[in-house]
Length: 96
Image 1 (spheres, rainbow, N blue to C red):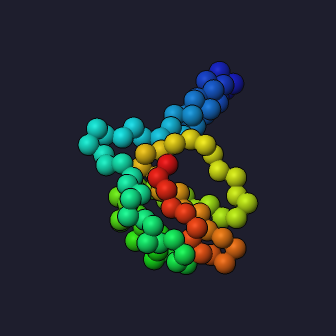
Image 2 (tube, helix red, strand yellow):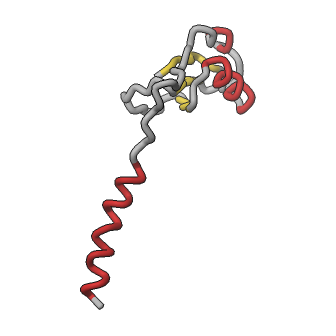
């Protein structure tokens, strides 16, 4: 019984690492474009504004950055990072 369980137990960490990898982007994927996002500065952070910013920027992912939040320094061309203040007002929107 132990001979059967041990090899299976060793596969669990390998499987977890394999599924944690992000998908590579296809060559035709559009990167985020933050040129038109300045109009959102000063507006309220909400689901509706998030959807609008994703549409305008063509980003695939959105990351909210609240006051005092720590963020990873990794750059992702398909991600939009939106910072907001304590009143939920958007203070910046940038790709990466």
